[in-house]
Length: 624
Image (tube, rainbow, N blue to C red):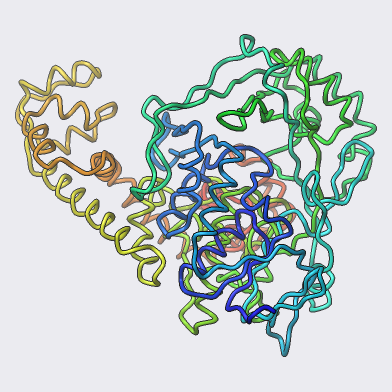
């Protein structure tokens, strides 16, 4: 019945969608096998895309020709650029989405790809021959042949849902778990492990008293994720809301601890360190009297709200009682309780940089099967696996991004070189080149690379090259044009910056703290005239020029530091170093260093969770 496919993609979540789209757009005959066509692109947890470092990943996916940015823009209900009080390396876009619209947009996008077929069925195993994958077995007893297979199983592999003392088999509330694949892979020699994640209750917005909460609006001039002209900026937005727990809430939660799978031994696996459950928070941070709770709308029209910060697997009656002690939630009715879920993953040290497994040729893993957490981390792996499955089948060169090219490069390198024993999520601190890997320049970094393999369109490349050309011209103009004290000094006075006594090149003034290009335009008729005559296509050109001038020194220094760290790869660390004495180290860093006891700086730098700043502190301690 089924033909032989170039690529079979198992799973229709964030990883599977990007994998299927990439392989199909590159020209591979692709099949997506998913247990339920109705849940393609489902946002299983929070209704948002982006955030710290994750927003950078989405911009990179977009620059490479993936769809997560476009789908987000089309389904966004709020947009915010986070961390604006910090440097541009930290600026991270985030969008609240309409959950139903997001999934629908993904499905319609995939249905529009001519090389992509669909089959609704459970994948129960893979077939192999002489160390190479040959196809997929399904629950209907069908074997479908393929030259390559990408597994994107999310939380479904032998998934168990925990709610208080109750346990259900499932990959998501109301959906059955997937069985068979783990056994097949273990018989082939793969090592597997278990991980845990959780989700908070969803609440009826009609029963929330928003007057007792603080409003969290989107940006006044909202941006968007995609660099393409296919999407538009939001003109109206929905707010989120913030409130706080209190000691009464914590006491109520504690009454359920003896029935909590977190504490009674029912859950043995590790959960995400940076997205702990509420019971974990009040247990680990007993000194804190309150924790932030966000009420996030699930869409334009629905009354359902996501209670961010209240992830839990306590019995549902304890969840409800504790929730009602939080200001604003006194009369809250739950649509569904929070729960924890345990699932199988495969330590990613079993993969190559292409995300192909070392054991079985042409078999690729992406997403939570590799031990990551988060939609964005999954989507980026799916994109890379989809590209590389196509490249491998058609005997083309692998497509690999390194750590200085993309957060995606950092993510994959971390996974396959360090592995992970807890759900891995991306942070800006994991990237040693984060001033180079900003959210604003992902198109400049990556579009040309993707266009060369045939994924990012020629139109995308034209837009990027136009932006690069216009930015260079603006930078050159600013560096070669002087500004007059008469016009500029009133502007400098506004920002408490010392006046200039004679004409000065604009770039020298622009690098002053508090000075921005928007102010410079007010203080220089020449600059205003130049920009208005140029009529730049996007405000990104001005932003890019300003960043390149203001942060030129930091960018150069970062390249220098990177070269030094590479040279110091083999510096030995004495056995008797007391890591507890390093006050700047996080608890995670201390735990990992004490457990692994790295013999060299190189080894230390590759331990999961050790930040580049930790390595720098160690180097200083060693007198280097």
